[in-house]
Length: 310
Image (cartoon, rainbow, N blue to C red; front, side, top):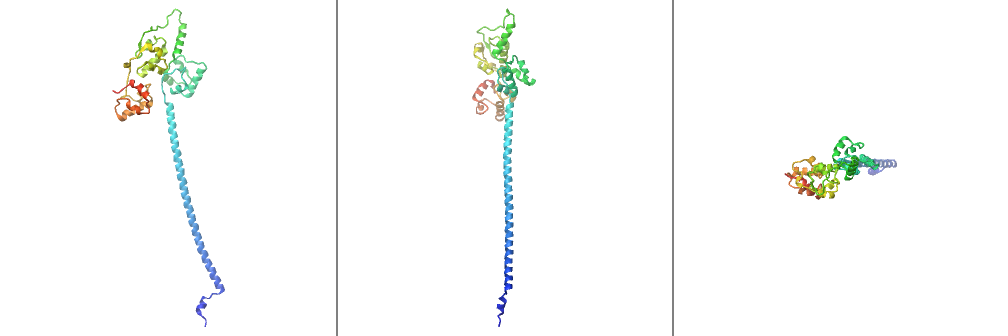
């Protein structure tokens, strides 16, 4: 008698091959799904990494751009500051026959004009009177009017000019009267006519002294004549100085423009004085400014006779 269970489990060779092919097919389908899923995951990871990398590159580019923008701003501020410094004019007495190019630039003249002036002098050219300076190539009328009060000629030029004029006079004609030795004038009161009577002082030097005295507000010592390139030592016997004649500046009332016109106060110092007054109130002395970088000890010392705090 045949066993039905055994017949049920028995497969022919063809059936076994079919089953094997089916199993292999199932395995291949399973593996293909796994491989597809793996590739999809890898693709998603690659896309995510690409996005992260792109975001990082964009952030880096933004950072570099911000740094460069900051550098451009810094350079722009520096250049503006340099241009402002170059535009700053420091008016002071000058001899056009001896002043160097740096001083001409500080007076507000462009570098090319200063070079032309030096070139003119190197070829033997000479300025003999203030009006001659008006002939400088490129000099405007406004520039000339600004600088003309500060033009002076040294004693050597003045004496040479006076000598040449005297040679044209008649032999018997007396020269300009000069005070005898022992005469003493007050340096803060003498006008140009009196100053010209001092031996060695002509019209040019007399005007120079009076103009600088007006800008200062008066002299407190004769040594200040050095500031306008005059040798004070030969003049000591002829002058006395009365400091009480000095016109003082009230630091609690005047503004920046008035302050900066004094020979001893530049723009930054004037600004510091006014700003301190606005923030701290009434000024009573110059002592607080010993801590300011705009002032040196010598600046405050020479300025003190010219200020008051009423």
